[in-house]
Length: 202
Image (cartoon, rainbow, N blue to C red; front, side, top):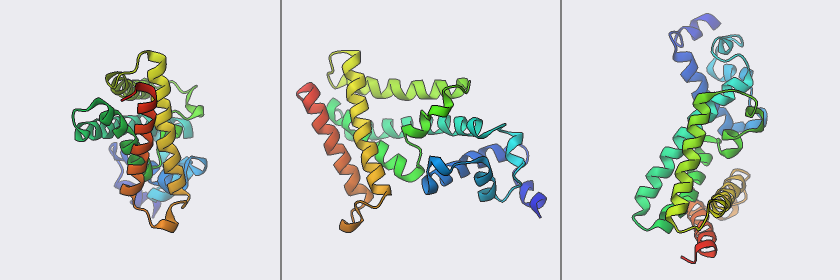
């Protein structure tokens, strides 16, 4: 029975399916409960099957990190374009994109930059995470920060605020008011705007 279920994932499909299932598991259970065995169970494949593609949990998580960095960067660029030409609005839209992405995937910076990945050599992940941070820092520079240090501090504060909203949302803090994803995303953006005004005066 296990073999027949695995047949659909042959010829390279299993690797992509494992990454997709990893996002589903992260969204439901978080990083602490993330394991190769749990991902295999979700796909209905044998516990040995994932190891053909990923030798251990950290290698699977590294592939998830690369995909998350790529997809989050794409979401941020889309949100910035939707925000229009104003540089402060474009930077504030990072909070909107981050909140929505993490609520739907569970893969925020705590996954993208998970501590256990620091010792995992993965050039693909490094390329994607570098591109993500360069994109967000470029938005900060365009909004008028004076130095690299200020850009890093402002981006860090915006993402920390947005991540705080995702955590509170995931933990049911906003349920009493039946607040929607759209409403909480807007609160994250307003928090980002306040941080940007404090830093740039805009």
